[in-house]
Image 1 (spheres, rainbow, N blue to C red):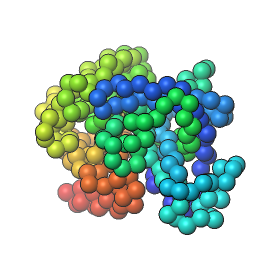
Image 2: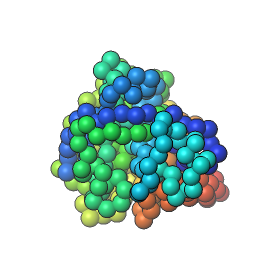
Image 3: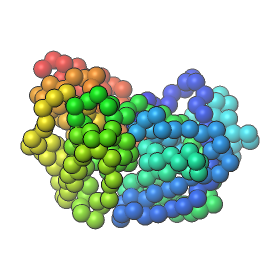
Image 4: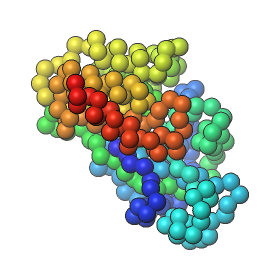
Length: 282
């Protein structure tokens, strides 16, 4: 989910109108939403395994004119009446069936997306912008490192399924406990390590697992995403201590403890700049 925040004046993003076809609860805290309908006729994805979409949630009490035009809404309405966005990774795109699968972590019934996920039903209509993305397993890499928390699990799972035949991969996935594990189907020679967080801070157990791992020799490609705090430390470990070239790594915070997505997106660029400055000075 190599994403950038939406900003006023940015080029009008494509907005797709879809219907919810199926809803499944994969684990206690992970829902799977399958979208379809005629609005997906012009949609395409598949180049990247970290494709993401931005679900649009109408501002409370606001009805938008049809046909829906996000650029016009931003031009004509005050910022507080714009649709709010929440970013989710595309788990799978079935071009033949024209079905888009999105896995969503459910953090509870507070906030914006949590209540929606718990009540969404087949037949509901949604709008989303995208897709974006920028990562896919490189067939020229000697081996692959994939690491993240629940927010990165859909992208890691999609990446494992798209590994080149025989490709070596180590995947480290942190979840709350064994009840949050999912059955994954890697296409290459992959070792998946489930890391159980328990009561520790998100990312602590994951960082320890990767630090203690016996990593293969050769030139790797790394994909590390999740909570910004542990991603910062993982970036230091891999780029500085382990010497992985920056251009061979997709490393980014999907979210940050203590902030909703609106707050994180507003500060993400400055956070990344500070992290790069601190670690470049080492």
